[in-house]
Image 1 (cartoon, rainbow, N blue to C red):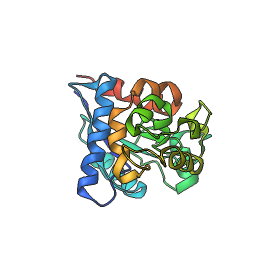
Image 2 (cartoon, rainbow, N blue to C red; image 1 turned 90 degrees about the vertical axis):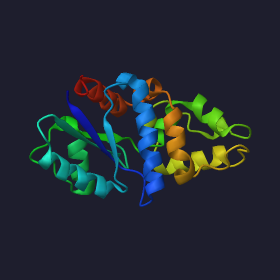
Image 3 (cartoon, rainbow, N blue to C red; image 1 turned 60 degrees about the horizontal axis):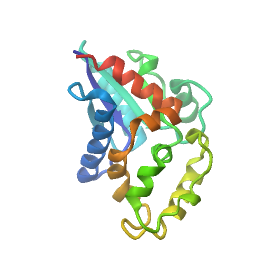
Image 4 (cartoon, rainbow, N blue to C red; image 1 turned 120 degrees about the vertical axis):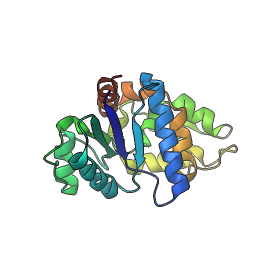
Length: 202
């Protein structure tokens, strides 16, 4: 059995937030048919930390271990993930790594929320304004700046949860999303889930 480990951006410096990050991604991935062969989620904090932890993991991986890197793209993507990370961040693909070990949330994790607007509306409850969200059905084309403003405007009057706060809401919401809607709305998410299903073979 291949043991997949996902080195993900998220969780900051707080152990409680990193726990929520691991739980959020685990619950989402489990629903994608990975129950019984779940990858291990490693919440690394910032993007740079995720990359560095991944590089160390790749260099030291056992034959049955398959590390993955999952970070925000931080912008539009017009090339393959490693090429994008080289151009944007100056990150080199480790010599031990393959193309299928780098994955991007385009343009940030919150784009996945747009793929499942029903869950977003149910989560924030009364006062949520769905018309404030971008109309673009291709979630990867929405800039992180536009998305941040849209989430702020859509949740400003939400009575159940209050205005969107990344530390307070993001990973609880992530755990509730429909992975298939994310996959259908984002080609990079589709690539991520497809890699997990192929590699996490019992």
